[in-house]
Image (tube, rainbow, N blue to C red; front, top):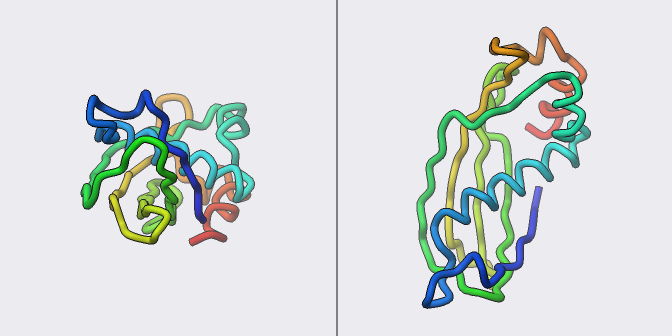
Length: 132
């Protein structure tokens, strides 16, 4: 799934280069949009009491992004077991050059317990799995 983000001025430093922390925010924007597009929007998950916290993040910054540029984020599932989900992100400039590659690892929690979507919420499991 592709997600686009136009860089805002507040996301940059004095040199108008995007601060590294913003890439993580973009990853979340893209992941939330991904779940919405597959039919499992965050609002629906939270109504069920289901949370999807970040357990791990890794980023490799390849090139600079500046104010006013548009970044396209290719978000895809690397691994999905129903208990944990590893999401990959490839961020590119308008000309197709990569500016960042990243991954995030998530689990699914119901209350204070880790839950297996395949067993407890098979409909949500199938929606996410259909994109894998």
